[in-house]
Image 1 (cartoon, rainbow, N blue to C red):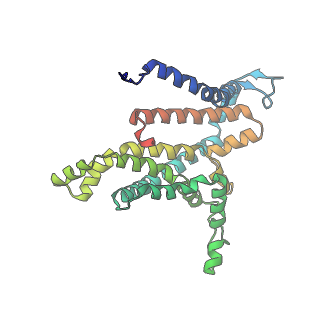
Image 2 (image 1 turned 180 degrees about the vertical axis):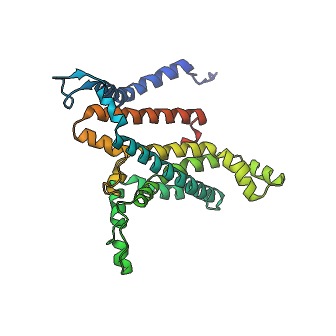
Image 3 (image 1 turned 120 degrees about the horizontal axis):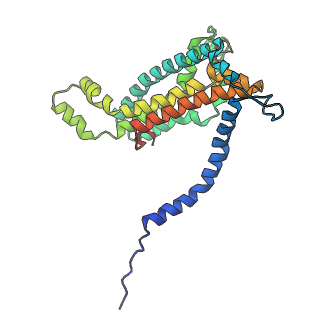
Length: 287
């Protein structure tokens, strides 16, 4: 007589305990490389020191005057201006590209998305320097076409174009993901109720894709707000953003004021993450 075999069911608490043990190495490196530097920066905000030397270190709050300096305020305004303009442009083209791909008859749409994000696999600075070489008057395009273009390096247009080129995939991916999760029956229901394709897009599709738009907007806004490589290379140092001031402070070993500005940016980032969690609790548009 054969004995009936039964699969052993693992209790949920044991699975949770096993996953907890597997995550411990990750948590260790997370605390070491993420939390510890933040704690050090918070400490440096309230002391006056040369670099990070403990000798001669004194408690002070004078470092916070950096927040009221004219150069800092101008850099913050520039960062907000470029971040908002870039995000708005990315929303327009992100919705256009995502919806066009969503409605297309292409069989392997994810291959198209792969081609779109393929440049992101290359080095970030390499891409920006390649753009800078194209934006100059003497470039590969002028050699091919036989006449030179005026250089746009150091202009607002160069910085915005560089940011859009770099961060547009961060907008397309969450919007397309949110579109893919829309029930196809809603399209038929909207048309059956008398909506035209245009009205269906504005009244049905766009509201349902709002999670992806919000997630994509934050994913574009934050690096534009805090980045320094694009304005430094494409702006040729003519336009100052808050990321450039933070870079200068740390290069000049003024870690105290640099830490204050870095913590301000970190607070903005954490606030944005909370917004994403409120809008998209399941993280559907980030998959």
